[in-house]
Image (cartoon, rainbow, N blue to C red):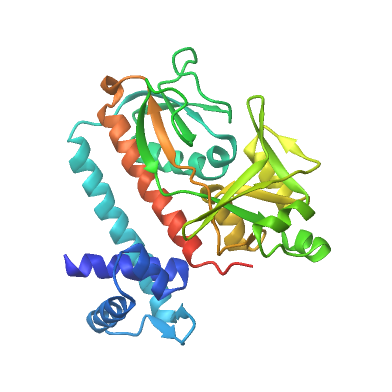
Length: 307
């Protein structure tokens, strides 16, 4: 459906403020994206964006159309979800272990939306950054970053392309300067994360075929991702955060992305369960729902200018 694809392009462009970023998100050329946007404006009958050589921004008419377009796309997504899960209402108890930072700041409101779509569900949530033992804990599912801690677990990808990014607050950068290369992190206070008994103080970066591993140190270490994020926002040091955790702070200007020409290490987000027989219609619907929202967040990151 060409018109549906044009609506998606319009939404991604509005969210990122960049036509080229929206084109990359949809895997089309910038030229094709420009043609599609002009086609949509012709169909709607009003200009939706004001364009310059460096940016695009919504017109007044575009802002009005944006809200209606969001509602229409949500209705289509809900219809698709209903078709995937069948006509029977989703019900039962859904017990999930969630990471601290991502769980409180993104997943909690998303799960509220999911529950509103399926009000016969009961949600039971546990927040922790420690590896989830779903054999012992009273949970059915765990959302976790990184590779499988147990090869016997079943992993359903939610955000397979997610990576870590370097970030710090404008206040920290003003006081201590901005590192331009990962090697310069040795001169900065780095906020390290505790994984069990292991301090994650060796940060990896990639550019082209080159891989760089940097030993970092700092005066603050925590096993809670939310604490590390708060320290970074408060100007206490440089964080190496999952892009999903940091994008809202980057978009709001509370954090600035550093060394953006280097790619951080992969931290795919997976939905884990102990047995494939647990992949019920509820689990399938949840995975689809969360995957779509993670894609939206990561698309916004593409349009944020690095420091």
